[in-house]
Image (cartoon, rainbow, N blue to C red; front, side, top):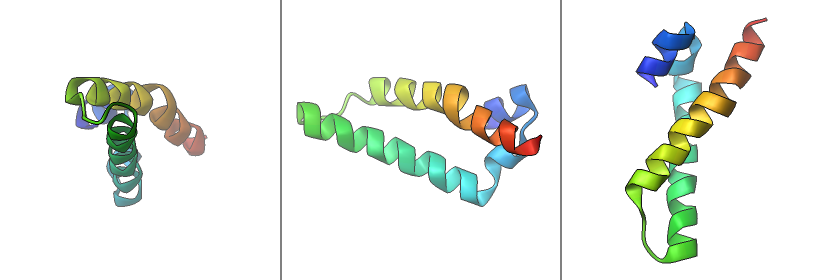
Length: 66
């Protein structure tokens, strides 16, 4: 998230309320994998989470700045 914050000039991304949301999303993705497959593919979870932070979450926060 630090790299994303720098790349998109979004210091708000690292504020407590936003890091909690991002962490919760990571835990939910992990839980989904456990429910679907009985185990966790951490590389897949991390990739999905990074995509979500970049494509959804950062854009949502950037939209609040306007």
